[in-house]
Length: 431
Image (spheres, one colour):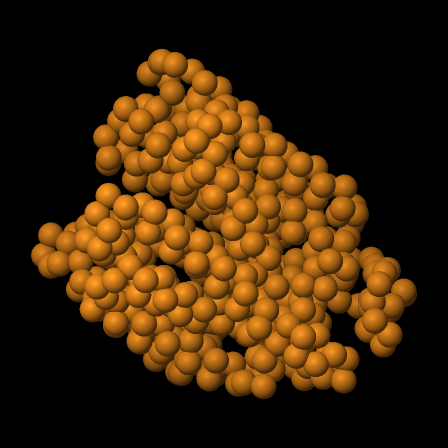
């Protein structure tokens, strides 16, 4: 799996991704402490609003970036995004009003919405062989999971030596280091976009989304994103409620439970690079989605049980199963998009995936928080479980058997495409 790091360009880009992730993790911890200083017992509502703003920025900005990305060199777009994020992080220690936090969070996440799809769209060009690209996707999944475990631990260690404001400087340093690594990488030029079919700015902004709604396996991916968001929202929003209130355990066990989720995801990511050489993406991704409702049912049993020492290890197993199932869905996603979009469409396609997947989280985050707080955890688990089940079953129905399982998959017939689109019946070579 590590053999892909021999590619100098990918090695620099992957290192930039890891360093930026660690910097972001430090900033997340510092932001929580800043919110507490500014709002006291209202810190939770401040962070909840900031999280919603983050999702809105992702949903709104990514398609707009996809519309103009063809006019801006990849390196300039990536570097500009990193420098913007560094500048925003540098100003956060001087914030003294809650509204300023909201403005800066929007700017920070808008820059991330420009960086991430551009970065993702570049990887298939850097690693044109599917075997190498699959291993790169595995490394990226591992990087996200390890960051969720490593950054809080690093932040806790640093906070014993300094105030939280200094953590923002770690965030700045991460983005600046990412900038230097991107500058040092030789990025391949993207394919021409073919603007004659674009339909103007609006057409380019919606091109990736229209691709998702027209190609069967990408329509299935929309539902898979929703299933993952249902499980992820329950874990992210309600872990502290389960551990502290429902099970009456210590604060440290909150991190332990989140670590179980990350561990499940990492184990599967490590195995998938070999599994995907033998098993079709459709079987892996739909299999992961169909596991989620089963885990929701198990969590429902844990939630409704009034007592029992077994509930704590059962919760850890359930969280690890959630992580494993989500990783089965998420890790091959880049392969699916790569096969579904021509090279010149990739930036728009990855921008659409970034935007539409976060739109799913924008639905499930409030549902997990508000329903759990007002109606109780059993109702929240039931509502999210139903969403996960419906989304998984719909994905199975929408995704035809054998569609896009390999690079030599049968050509598909798509409907509703504009005149001149390269996907008419019998000539689809990218699906």
